[in-house]
Length: 150
Image (tube, rainbow, N blue to C red; front, side, top):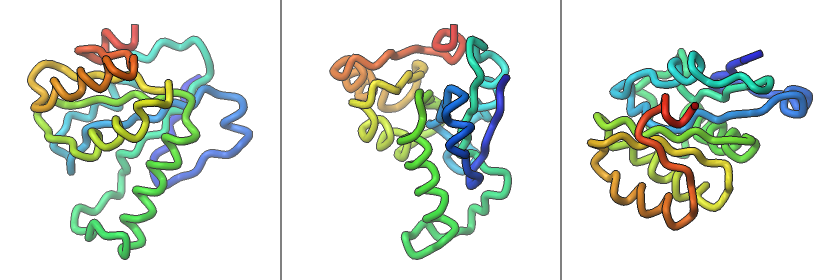
C-alpha cells in the first residue's frame, strides 16, 4: 500500500510504526521543476507499506513572504524539517533546470543520516559538489529516478 501525505498535513505515530516513511526532498523551486514526486509514486518498488511525505503542497501561495515571521512559510519549513527527521528514507532529487538552494541545504543537513538516496542528473549546475558530498559520506548517488528506484 502507498499513501501520500502532503504538507502541511501530519502523520500519526501509528502510521509511522506500521509503514516505511519516505520523504520526497528536492527540486520544486516555485513550480520550475518537473513534478518528479508523481513519477516516484508511480515507479517506487512496493516491498513494504509506504507513506510518502510530499512537501509539494496543493495550496502553496508564491506571494507568501519567505520569513520566519510569516506563519504559513514557517509552518511549511518546519513541516519539511520534521518530515526529514522522522523519515526512514529521504529521496533527494536535483532537477537540472533548477538551482535548488534549499535542496543543497538539505543534502548538507542530512548527509550523515544514512537515510539519503540522491538523484542528480547530468546538467545540474552543482553536480560536482553533490558528487563530492555523496562520495565523502557514502551516500548512494544516481543519474535518474528510474535507476535509483530499481
